[in-house]
Image (cartoon, rainbow, N blue to C red; front, side, top):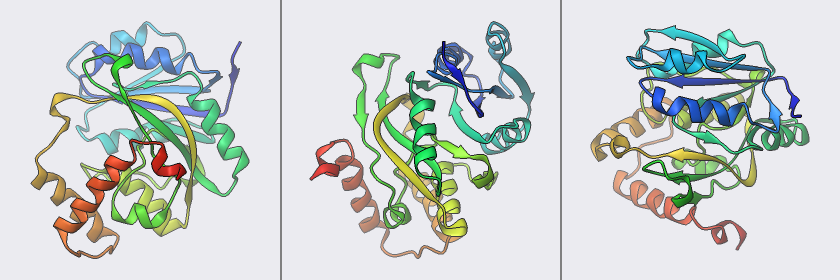
Length: 249
């Protein structure tokens, strides 16, 4: 029987009821069980409430924010655990996700959060996914662009809250906040821990992505530099992160 921990999992959903069951099953099958599991349904028009009702000991809250970051902040205020994992309803945890990340935070008390690697998949086929390697925490790399997904385990007393004004790259915004305003670090675990679903509409227009990136750079006074050069450099980095040899050479 799995042990139970002082961990809360906040799952946000907006019309992802058809993915929610697989997500909840993965959370409730952890080798280290969370003490609280909360689904924050942000104005869904599907069967999310019915899906949650079919699971024992899962809390459900419906809100009408239509803002992912506000929904996550709301969820954080509803839990009372020492650690929190924010997870999207369309993703799936591997069985040791919480155990591994919790262990990393026990080994490195100064780390504000712990994170690992992921398998990116599409069309519902987990077996055809591609591994992406995050890599060790490096604030210099973080200042260039994000390479740490939101699927991490965070110490509750290190969580500064999400900025509701940030609609894209909210994970990057969170890690920059912790690193540059709190002096916090992340602890990397070189182990594949979850499945990340890519949707056909996930690829946004380049201008929109660039605009969102520059808002965050301006927020943290990271400088403007040359956009094409930054974009090219980060694309090379994103390609390299998919190979383990990049981190072990």
